[in-house]
Image 1 (cartoon, rainbow, N blue to C red):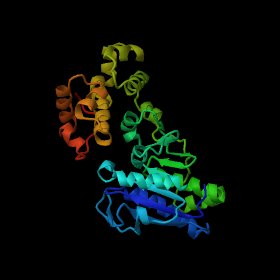
Image 2 (image 1 turned 60 degrees about the horizontal axis):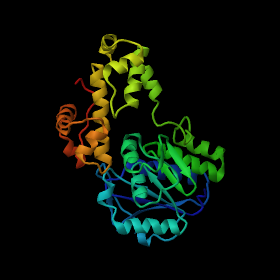
Image 3 (image 1 turned 60 degrees about the vertical axis):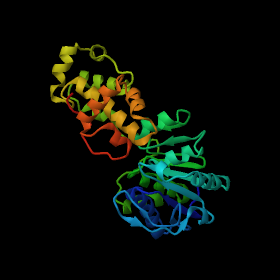
Image 4 (image 1 turned 120 degrees about the horizontal axis):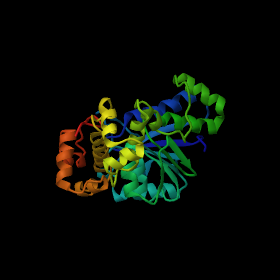
Length: 324
């Protein structure tokens, strides 16, 4: 990977300003420390300003079709990528690929590249929250639960501060580990993480559950969201009776094992509604709910709003699990 030519960031409406800043500031520090030949610019689909998800409006330098020669183009997207990416935009991205531009994506930007047919045969990552929807829509793509993936001419990143990890990796490839460490020091990053680092340490999260049987039961639930296991099967595989598991669970999230399990499945359905093209009924079935009506009642009770609102992108925040 070379950083000796121009890098552009394609901003889509509702993009993450955190991710854009993480990328540009890492490159800025690198140039201040003497790394040569790094230039960057922000572009949009029409050349106009773009509003970030936090409401700030960012001016861009050009439209995608007038940006000129590039080394790398990163797609910085939002939760509603489909609304802004037209067939013409997809064709422009394909043209960039044909002209040898390396294509990258932060977080949900991977959906944009995948829908344009530009991620086939590559390792890919997206934010853990979007993984279920991405796998559902693109089952043929090799998607990983990692911080970032660089597979030949495609660069995908889970987003958030992991963007800095990816940029530091590219700087290391360009000028070596010593300079990358200096950049990380300037950014007050105590440790640089490799691309294959897991996004979340689910094993550490499970270890916080004070009884081993509760941790084993939680792991089984997470791994069997659809179709869900019967609670007595979960308990038996965890090495306890159902009554013992319910007693051990009293001081853990969800109030009851069943409540925790239902919460996990509802969260999976919400992620699918937000990030994929699935209908409410399809998301319910994918999360192991046989009855759409029952699913809708449970969803509203858990999140405080109907599943149709999540489908329209009008999400509200809610705890991961409630007692059900």
